[in-house]
Length: 606
Image (cartoon, rainbow, N blue to C red):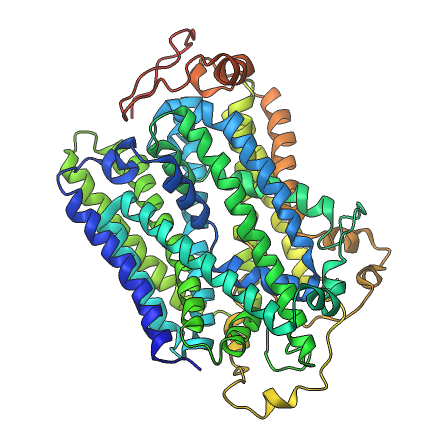
C-alpha cells in the first residue's frame, strides 16, 4: 500500500506546480497586459509551447483509459498515431498560415472577421465553453476516483485540492505558468507511464513472454472496412483525424500558436508535438497489453474474476500490485496521474478566461485599461475553477446511464465544429446561414447515433477472450489488494478513451469472434453498431455536405476579408518553398504580412 515516500512524491508534484505559478506571478508582475497574461507577450519558445500543447490533451483519460481499452479490446487504438500525424501536419501546413497572422487572442474572433457578424462566433463560443467545462469535470472525476484506489483519499478531497491549486497557479501566473508547469508535468507523466511498462515487462519475463501471454491483444490488426468493428485500421486511423484536427483549433491549442514569435515557429510547434503525442499514446496502448500479460502470467485476469468492478480500475489496481515492494514508485504513478489532470485543468482554465474576456467583456467594454483587463481575466480563472469544482462534485452522484448521455452530448461537437473551421478557411462561398444549418445537422446526427448505440437493444461490443482465473485466491484473500466494488458507481461515470468516448454502463460478453454479436439483419441495428470512433468524422462530413448545399441556396456574403481564406499559392507555395512572408511577425508586434492581398473589406473592429 501507499507509504510515506509515495505521499511525499504525490504532494511534492502538486507543490511544485503551485510554486511555478507563484514564481511567474512575481517575475511577470510588471507586465499587466492581456497579451502578456494570455499569450506570454507572443515571445514563447517553440519547444516548451509544443510540449505544453501535448500534455494539455494527454489527460487522465489516456493514462487510465487507453490501457483499459487495450486490456479488453487489443492494441487497435495504436492506429491513433496515423490520425494524430495526419491532423497535426495538416494543421501546420493549411491552418496555421491563415490563423497565425491574424494575431488574435481568442480563436473565436476569427468568425467575426470571416463573416462580419457574431452569429457563428457565439455558436462556436457557446459549444466551446460547455465542452471544455464538462471535459474538465470528467477528467477531474476520473483522476480523483482513480486516486481513491491508491491513496485512500475520498474523491471530494482530491477534487478540492486539484481545482483550488490549479485555479490559483493559473490565475496568478498566466499562460507562462501554465506552459512551464505543463513541461514539468509531461516529464512526470511520461516517467510514470514508462515505469508501469518496464516493471510489468520485467515481472513477466521479457518481451517474448509478454507476447506469449497477450498474443491475441497484439494480433488485432484488421484491414476489413467494416464500420461496426470497434477498432480496425480504417476506423481508427481515419476516424481520429477529425478528432485530432479539432484539438488543433481549440482555444488551448491556438493560445500556444499565438504565443510563439513567428510563423515558422508556429508551424514547427505542431511538427515537434506530433512524435511526442504519438509516443505517449502508443505507450498508453501498450500498457494495457503488458498488464494483461502480467495478470495472465500470474493466473488471474482481475476483470474476469471480479477482483475489480470496472475496466477503469485496472491501472490503479495494477500499480498497487506492481510497486508493492518499491517505495516511491506508486507515488510516481499518482504524480503521473495528477500531472495529467492538472495540465488539462490549467490549460482549459486559461483558455476559458481568454475567450470570456476577449469575446464577451472586451466586446462590451472597449475602453478598459490593461491592468483592469488582467485583473478581470484572473477573476475569471477563479470563477471557472469554482464551476469545475461544482460540476465535478455533481458528477460523482450522476448514475452511469445519465453520464453516458452527457458524455455523448459532448462528443457530438468536435467533428461538426472542426468542419465549421475548415469550411470557413477553405471555401469562399459558404454563408453564415448555410454553415449554421450544417453545424446543427452534424451535431444532431451524431447525437442520434450516440443515443441509439447506448440505449437501443443493440448488444454492446464484446471483449476479447479473457485470461486465466485459477490463481485469483491470492487477491480474494488479501484485503489490501481488493478494490471496493462501490467504485463501480464512480468509475461508470468516467470516459475510458477520449473526449468523444462514452463510458461503460452495461455488462459485456466475452467472445473470440467480435462480429458474431452483430448478426442482426436490421438496418437500424447496423447503424447503431457503428464504431463510436467514427462519430466525429460522420459529424464532420455531414456538416461539410449540408453546410455547402445550404450555402448555395442562401445569399452570398457581400464582402470577405481575404486574410481569413486559405490560398494554396500564398500559404503553401510562397511560404514553404519561396520563403515569402515567412517569419515576418517579430517580437510579438503585429505586422501585416499580406500587403499584396486586395482586401474586399476592412478588418472588423471589436
